[in-house]
Length: 303
Length: 303
Image 1 (cartoon, each protein chain N blue to C red):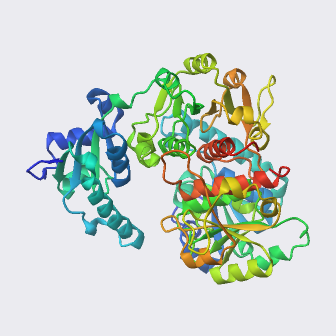
Image 2 (image 1 turned 180 degrees about the vertical axis):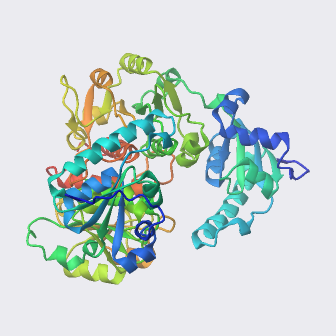
Image 3 (image 1 turned 135 degrees about the vertical axis):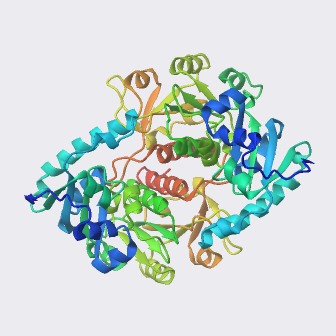
C-alpha cells in the first residue's frame, strides 16, 4: 500500500473538485473514472476488482460530532471504522495508492462516504455479451437478469444485488437505462456491481444475441399479449427444461412495464401470483422474487 | 358525498395545522387520528375501510408549475388527477365529507399529497391477535408475517405490502417497532395497510399466543443457534406439513437480525440460499422472497 505523505486538507483543491464531480455522468464520461462510496462498496471493489482502482481516499478521523445522537448512526460509524481498518489491511491493497483526507475534504467529495471512497476506471466495467456467451466454462447454463428501461438508481442497484444473490451470470440493461456507475446505483448494489458483469445493449441486439445463443427470454408481465398468455411463476418453476437450462428473465420499466412488441419477441411470459388484495409489487421486489424462485428451482431436484 | 361550500385557502388556519401535525406520532396519539396521503393510499382506504374516514381533502387545481420538468413527474400527476376523479365517484364516498383546499393549504398539509389526503380514525386500526385466531373461518390456515424491531418506515411499509401480496392473514410488529400509522409507512404499503390487520405485541405475548394456538414460528436467520441449525428455504418449502398449515414467519431488525433468545424459542430457523457472491439481501427483499416462496408452495400440490 502506498500512502501519500501529506493529508489532503484543502476542500477547494482542484483534485477534490474533480473527484466530487464524478457524481455526475458527464464528468464520468469525460474522465473515464467513477466514484465508489462507503466501506461496504470499497471492500467489495478491493476484494474483487483491485486492478481497476486508481486511488483510495480515507478520512483521517471520523468526526463523531457530525453524527446525530441516535444509537444506530453511532453503531454504524463504529462499524465503518472497523471495516475501513480491515480494508486497509487487505493483501490486495499492496499496490494501491491511499490518500488521507480531512473531514472537510471528505464532505466535499461525497455526502455518503462513511469515511472512505475509491476512484476507479470506468472502462474496465464495460462488458459485452459475446465475452460472456463465449466463455470457456460454457458447460454451466447462462442465466441473465435483464431490465428494459430501468430508470431509478435505487431500483437498479437493488436488482443488481438481487441478480447476484440469485447467482445470475450477468445483468443486462436493455435500451435507455440509468447509468450503472451512478453513485446511488453503486451504493444500492452493496458491492454486487463488482461481483457480476453489467452489460448494456439495445433491445434489438439483446433479442438477436439470445436467439443466436438459443437462450429463451422469460418476460415478466401480468397481462401477456393476444398471441401468448402470461403463465404463473408457480407453474413455470416446475418446468425443469426451463429452470435447469440457460435463460434470460426480462423485467420492464418501473411505471410502464414491458411494451407489447417486446412481449411478442419473448419465449415465455410469466407473472408472480398475488394471493392477497395487493394488486402488484414494485419492480425491485418482483425481480428478487422471480430471480430467486427460478434459482431455487434450478438448484433442487425436479420440483 | 358531502362537499363543504368553501374552499379552504388559509394555510395558517388551525385546522390545517392540526392535520399537518398528524405526521408526528405525538399528534396522532393525542387526537386519535392519522393521515393518509396520495391517490393510491386514499383509494384503498375508501375501498376497504370507508367507515374509518373522517374527512377527505382534495386540492382544487393541481399545480403543474410545481412539477419539475421531467416527463415522469408530469405523467404521474396526470395519473393522479384521473385516480382522484375515480375516488370521488366511488359509491363508498356517499357518506364522506370532502373539503376542497388551495395549493398552498395542501402544501402545508403534506409534502407528498399528490392532490388528495384523508384523515382517519386510528383506533379502528388497532387489532389484537385473539380477534384473528378466534375468527370463525378458522378452517383456513393462519399465516402470519412477524417483524421484530423493524425500525425503518420504508421497510415497514414494503413488508406489509409483501405480506399482503403473499396472502398473509396478518402482519405482527413485535416489541419496539416503527408506528404503522407513520405517514411514510402508509405510503410504502401502497394501500396494503387497509387490506390486512397489523398487530402490535411483545415478544413474550407473541410466543405465548403462537404456542397456545399451535402455530409454529419460522425464524429467518442465516446462522441459527447451537441447539438448532438454520435450514435452507429451498428445502423447507418442500415440507407440506409446514407450508400447508398455519405458520408465522418472523424476521429480525434491519441491522441486528434476531437475538439468540428469540431463535431458541422458534420452531424452525430458515435462511435464503445465496447462489452468487452477495453475502445477504436487505430485510424487505428477504421478507418478500421468503413469504412469497412459502405462499407459492402452499398453493400448489406437494412440491
